[in-house]
Length: 99
Image 1 (cartoon, rainbow, N blue to C red):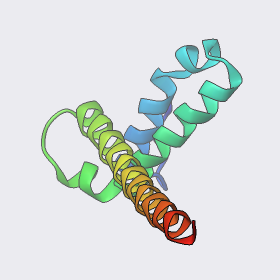
Image 2 (cartoon, rainbow, N blue to C red; image 1 turned 180 degrees about the vertical axis):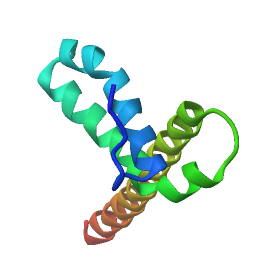
Image 3 (cartoon, helix red, strand yellow; image 1 turned 180 degrees about the horizontal axis):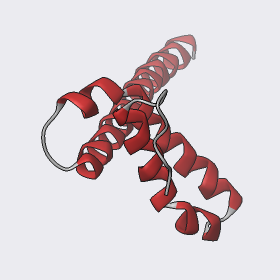
């Protein structure tokens, strides 16, 4: 468990405590999965102000921050996939018209 020092804000303390609670789990993961988990923890830093401002369980708010960031990645992926599908249709039409 992380001890809070005088220069550390409460939200940073909670984020560190959250990460520390997962240390044994993280250590048991394969290296590539550890890297993914580390990326997920970055979401708690990105949404630090929202986590600090909200009411309720700190850990639930941090999980929600992770879900938000995951959703952003999913939405971006879907948009890129749609763009690729559109481009594929365009290329197929170009090929047909060239034949």
